[in-house]
Image 1 (spheres, rainbow, N blue to C red):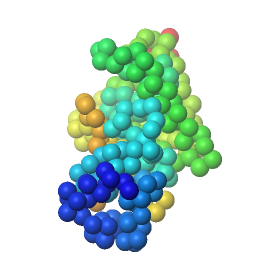
Image 2: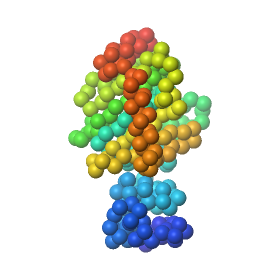
Image 3: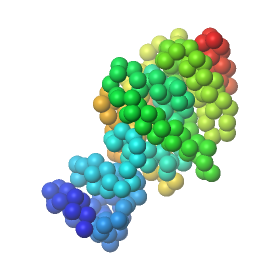
Image 4: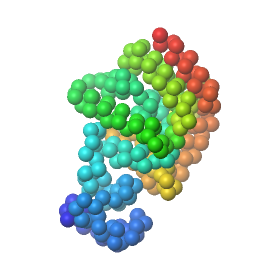
Length: 255
């Protein structure tokens, strides 16, 4: 028996039947989760863990045995199942679009991580990017502030390579990168970065980043609020082609 799950359910006063009702599955399906090796769908793991006040990796560790920051692993699983991803980043290139050099330079800042930890996370980040070149890539729209293109990270070579890669990815059929010009005044997005994911059954989840760890949201009102913020943010961004032109223009300044 999955003893960790059983104890978490008992502590929270939940049964297989009550969990099934709350996450929208058959009670028999929820009952099977207590058996060793029976792991629910990613979004269901996230929902159940939220109800029980635990992390998904505590209840079902096997899917998360990857090299990465443990708190990020559930979202990496969501990314793999998403059919659409919308990312707003005011300060850095999104992880799915980072070059190896840019990712390594970012993780080395401040000396907060040991060199072997940096390399593990870089490897995991590059592995995540395979979803964009796989047989069924999600539609990925990334909105960045222009400061992301102009703030030095690593050295000039790192920045030039990163912006060249960003422009090349944005030319593809499944990736859009849109830039909010630096002369746009304060806008909604500057309150913080977030990512919205849509799964093939229409379910939406969100990811909020933080100084210490990230947070996955599945509450409908939260998703709706972030959806409104997304619409406001994209309204400030340049269209696709002018954004690519600006990225290439700034890349030349890093020579």
